[in-house]
Image: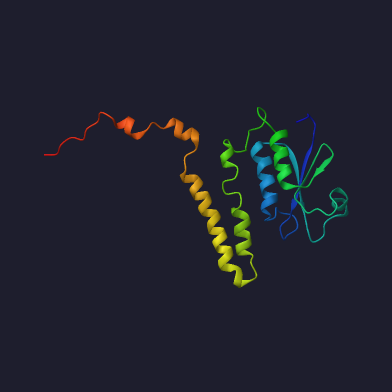
Length: 170
């Protein structure tokens, strides 16, 4: 990251118009910057009366958005990727997954959960619940399945136990 480059994060405000709101996308970007220990300016945006200057900065966009080096970034996923590249080791910690297999594990849980709990149509509840549970089972299966590097580190049980005998009782 270039010295003197200023990071400004704009996020949705809570109902009081000032505090950090409950938008998970806004909170995610805030956490990334905070966990990396980056120096940044946080601006909460009251969505009921967004200032005109914000409409000029990111027309048609809703927070979160980020300004870095005079450039406005509005896509949450691209902001996250940018922060991981721009705020890189050794000055900043790496926060992305260590193993590429982990990237997709659980990636749709929030989406499926949101669809389920926000559903206004009772007729869709069973289907949405099943989709949500399926995404949880996918994550569970991933967590129960060892990654290749874990298999490489674990000796085979029969080899580890060869030559051992159980003592006779009595």
